[in-house]
Image (cartoon, rainbow, N blue to C red):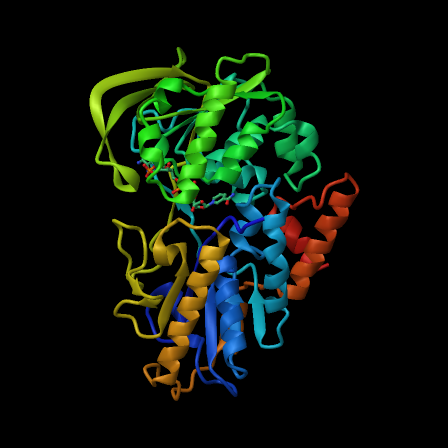
Length: 465
Ligand code: NAP
């Protein structure tokens, strides 16, 4: 299968900065051994692809990868849907990189990642039953910080806001037969909750039209093929778009044709027990509470029209509104990077670190890759190319003398001393492999590829046993 989730960001540090982040960074990098040292902050795809390129390009390069959790691979572990195991095969490549004799993995050390989600900025966002897709995905994928989420699926209709692939992942997990999910690495607590689910209908709401939908054809096909689940589309949404079809780029044309075919063949069929559907030209205005004032009972949407055409068309409110009843709202309008430290430039508007091909603006020796570099879009292959570009820029700067490699910096040894001083014990890659083995063993016992640990303390107990 084609690559899927892209992920995370990593920051590569080869020079001097201030603050908490910098006190780590300052002690790392450059010439304390035979060759240059690079510190990568974040052990997701962006981090590992950058490490891979650097290690291959120079046979004297030493790379340290720091990761907040005791377990590596970022969004490949915690973002990719459990029923897309083939996407997780990149873990084999990352493992080879981590096992390289000049690569060192330090898990359990506070670091950096795409840790927030864009806010809908509407009232009622804080009501019970409103979740961000990021948290919901983290919950079914075993992200320790999301294990307490408790999304009681005791309602019939769920509204998902946003029409990207994350929205479709969430919709699919909500509607998939349990027997299929049971064979994946979805967490047992999510399986238990899904087993008691009353959810029968999922509406995936976008602010623009069918020609601007952000998901890809494979994910729409998976929705169409869900057993016992009908597509519930509104034929009127597709009436005026056949004209535009011929001028569309091929992937968008095929996606649109698939949706149009689905409208024709499926709409009006009510034999299935469950349904899903796209709703277009609707923006969230307000999440509506039920009689208790605490739980979500619906959502008020602004009815939009499009200004302009094609990918750049803008949603403009018409002034009309529409209310949809639902017992749960999941906002899936994109992930968001956060500023890491005052010494690292950050553009709050675009939520990225300003950079030129990965070289961070006005900050010699600092590079970025992944979502912090370009924003939260693209599949894993996008992150791979993007990370290779960052590595190339760093290597070019080293070769041109732009980075002062002659300054003798102590590198990772001193970080190890600093962590010790602060009472932090890092998890090495062989220690992660112990966690991995135990997760696989626990999974095999119940017919799953793995049963993830949900608690950092359980991970550490196995790592250090
Ligand atoms: P995404 O593809 O950017 O989709 C975000 C959706 O939210 C779009 O429909 C967007 O509409 C909408 N949106 C954004 N801001 C909004 C607002 N203020 N109000 C209402 N709607 C808003 O993001 P994603 O789904 O989080 O996925 C992130 C990346 O990971 C994507 O590149 C995706 O393809 C990738 N991914 C891939 C897979 C896979 O291959 N299976 C799985 C998961 C994720 P507009 O278009 O109007 O902005």
